[in-house]
Amino acid sequence: MDTSARKEQEYIRAIEGEDEILDPEIIKRGEVLISYSDCAECHKTDKRAKGPAFRDIAKRYPTTSAYLDLLARKVISGGTGSWGSPVMLPHPDLNEEDARAMVSYILSLEE
Ligand code: HEC
Image (tube, rainbow, N blue to C red):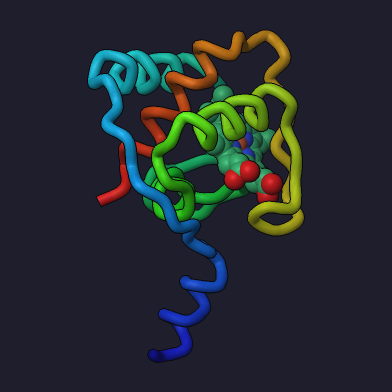
């Protein structure tokens, strides 16, 4: 494996797990909610910015209910340390259902 492939693997740290099928309506709603929120200030779909690329997040996490909950709570509370030292600001005005829809959209970006 060449250095860049190994670097990518160490950055993504993909977690094993069986993907669940997501409701396309919820994915669509998540995409719309993201477009109305501040996410794009720090996230791009394919490129690392201040925050990790959405597609890299999709590569790491299996699409399961448990990870959707975990990531939705992280979007609401903010945090750092999973992808390096930059900090995600909290989004206390988001409810869990909307945050979960946003995360459903993000995890749906894996190919
Ligand atoms: C101020 C910049 C910033 C904004 C705004 C922001 N993020 Fe983040 N986001 C980050 C950073 C930095 C990380 C990496 C945090 C870490 O390493 O734990 C991150 C991580 C994530 C993760 C992965 C969390 C994990 O533990 O792996 C998700 C999902 C996410 N963001 C979704 C969103 C969504 C949805 C929005 C909009 C509601 C948003 N972010 C807005 C900076 C931001």
